[in-house]
Length: 264
Image 1 (cartoon, rainbow, N blue to C red):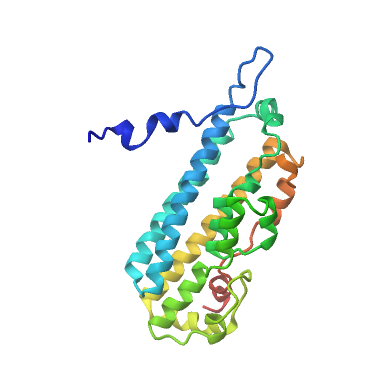
Image 2 (image 1 turned 90 degrees about the vertical axis):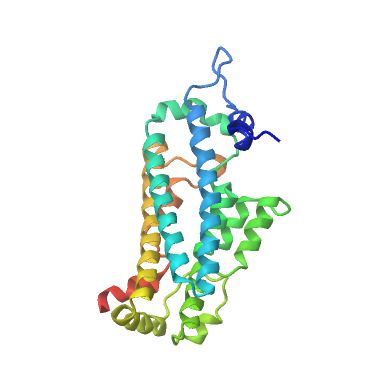
């Protein structure tokens, strides 16, 4: 079988996926809708890759493989930088331009991104309310619900430390993995010890902090992009828009790793 660049990457199929919904007075799609579609399709591809990498990080941590976990975390951080930079491209679209096709989006909303919700759950941001954005019985709802019941990256990190012989609090190892992030004082005591005497474990900790900070940076840029585009209007599909997005800022995924900073 002859494999070409186009056939391997499914280029014809890929380029056929940008189908604007808008029509101006002459029946022509609004110019900037193509950019809007491509940016969000690329985000979905990055979410897919981030999920792929995060699951490798979790497997590596559970296996006690700090080298693989660290290198994969570094890749995730590099991808995050690209995800943040994509917002610069989206911000070249003016509010007036967006409003020219916004009504054609109907009930669709970024809140319905199943992959982003999966990614949030993998990282530990477990919020059952987000399940309502995808109705029961849909494939998206099933995928998000399944991930809701799975251990998080921080759970894998706790297993990693336990596998290396460190005294991870049993209540953390046995915790309800559907619960959102919380602080574990006994875990913080352990982390302080590791920071001062265990460079390999410390490196993994710092990469997790980098990841947490990178996610927070992406959230902040996303909020400001929404605010400059639609202000505080209600989002498409009836979502609360910027008001909700603001509430997600500065909520750490790994609070123990932040809490120890004042004690180091």
